[in-house]
Length: 102
Image (cartoon, rainbow, N blue to C red):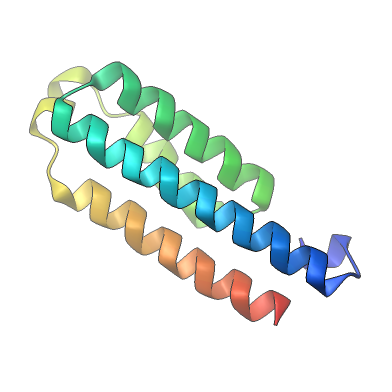
């Protein structure tokens, strides 16, 4: 993303907005898991995958894609590992974006 814009303030704003939106999606994914709402879970993981792809956040996109592929049967037994993976990958993405736009 940094290669596409010479305005560092714009890039900081864009990065901050992406991370904020991605956190909301991850929170929604976690809530959908708690409710056992497979349809909402799939919708939100798909949205996170797309947002990450547009932002160039490849690791986050891949984590969301893996989550999106969970079957209905596996969804019922999915634990906190999946959410922790998404949160950890998002935090690593945030740190990298912060480093890039600093």
